[in-house]
Length: 137
Image (tube, rainbow, N blue to C red):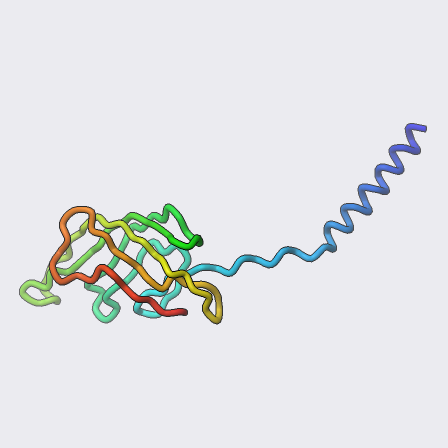
């Protein structure tokens, strides 16, 4: 009797396991990215170039607290060239920042955050962009 029960359980397990393996997998959620001004699209980027032509304004050391939801938030550093007396001879300065990515949109090849707000938590240098409009990848 015990052997018959064990055999029946083994057959049931094989049938269920085969059915589970052949079941279609749930579709993966589209990847959400942030597109920088150089055209690169990255999910949870650790760096983000704001001034693509010369790299004189970059966000680095980004640690994302949230990602993929309606709003993504991060902390990190803004590295900005003071361009004194001119950019090639200028010095980079670092400022702590918080980021807020929002307006997540469905694009032709996934999702992308379309707005990025840069919040300087201490000193904010004059003339620096803090609200960016981003494009789909």
